[in-house]
Amino acid sequence: MVVTIALLARHWWVVAVRSGLALLFGLSILFLSRRQLSIIVLVFSIYALLDGIWAIATARMASRRLSEIWPICLEGLVSAALGVTALVWPFVPQGVVSLIAAYGLLTGVLEIIAALRLPPMTAGHWLLGTAGVCSLFLAVAIVLMSHADAGLVAIALGTYAVAFGALMLLAAVRFRLDHARLLTRTAT
Image (cartoon, rainbow, N blue to C red):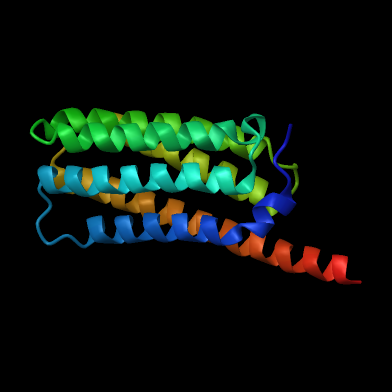
């Protein structure tokens, strides 16, 4: 079963809130005055936990059928679990960098699966797919700089979050426009 654009269009604002979380996280990481790995890990863990909870809520608002929303629910569970793990494991920040790479890999794959479940040739399909590729890029970047200093990790993570947030915001705007179009079509 495929999630319909009508479901996403009706709940465009939940995608916008998730976008806002990502943008807030990314900008806060990029503009931290002290880029200590322990602070980056703390901020990441809070973001991942909130993003996971919101992803699950988003999926549940879009549909009650698990067969339609499982990629986003699983993405939310992965994100929340990694957020909690990073919160309870703050004294091993370098180990959490590996968790961040796993986060990028798992959420990227699940976002691409979710995009493939949307009707092709729609803006939402391409924007969500691009957000998934962005998450995969984060995983590769973090793995390539696994022994980099905190400043580089912060720049990669912040840049990813801002790019992801911007793509999700574009998707939310697109879904909002689709919602307005669907309302106009049903009114006539």
